[in-house]
Image 1 (cartoon, rainbow, N blue to C red):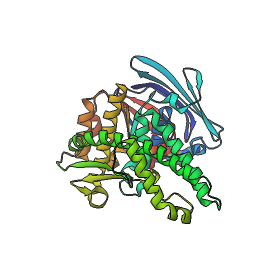
Image 2 (cartoon, rainbow, N blue to C red):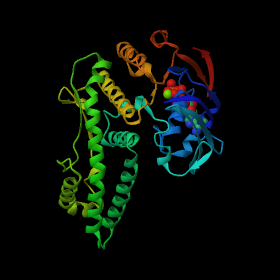
Image 3 (cartoon, rainbow, N blue to C red):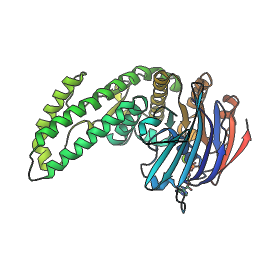
Image 4 (cartoon, helix red, strand yellow):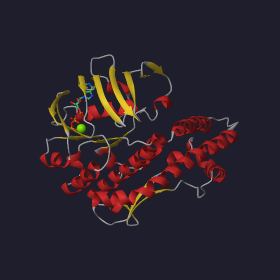
Length: 366
Ligand code: ATP
Ligand code: MG
């Protein structure tokens, strides 16, 4: 996939930018707070129902303006599509080739992008919520049915929690059964995705770090040991029944896939507790590369790669390993850094260079 052109207006600190990115490498450099991540975010939003930074739409619209607009021409499989997004504090509107689109699923796969940002490396050290959010987003990217089953799980969960708070608990059993049914689907899809990613992780970890530690990814849903949907449902029923008394006491569903965690393991030890910062960064980047590989296989085309704040994320050796790997692939890459790094440009052939300042963009050649 390739972004041929993109126009951004009144988005965060960007007044108006039109850019024709290079086919392969693009460097966006500029001082802190100038709008580099904002531009990556705008590109990402063209193909995704949610930003990688926030779920609050009002933040995206430039202060003092009514709406933000993002338009991009995307080439995929020899076909060009024009994607247009209008963001208002109350909602977003999407058009594909001039026609309004009402379901998020219609945008699915039109512009795939994988982001690697400082927030991503942060997810290793925080609680399970950010890893779960990463997992859900990543599963959805390659699996269009996932969004629907995830939403339906959330809806049923809300209903069950509502009943748990009520004095009258009539119907609780039915909602518990529905939750187990829907939860089993969520878990089955997550397990399938994690197995694929886990199978690819080691290769990319070795490529990026140049080290030989073994890297693994593990998703062990609470109370579930089976892989088959019917059996998972039965195990979830048992889990919910076991927790029913505490659920009633707390007025909320205290166990289930909405509480699960994704575990990162390096040399058979939890990365969170024992990994150095560099190892944690390499691990997450390897995870992202595995995700790209998976999207490539699913869609028959490589997604865009958005590398935010690359200089602060990786040391010179890892940077070099990554760039060397990327030069051999047909991937459109957007890299942001604070400096026009000569080392980086030396490894990135025909890199298009853009300077970002105060929400404006200047093309400096390629
Ligand atoms: P860094 O190198 O520090 O990561 P950056 O170039 O990536 O910097 P961005 O995060 O892209 O910086 O842009 C941050 C700027 O955008 C800040 O100055 C912030 O005040 C501004 N900004 C964010 N949201 C809005 C908005 N809705 N309206 C106007 N300006 C905004
Ligand atoms: Mg930034």
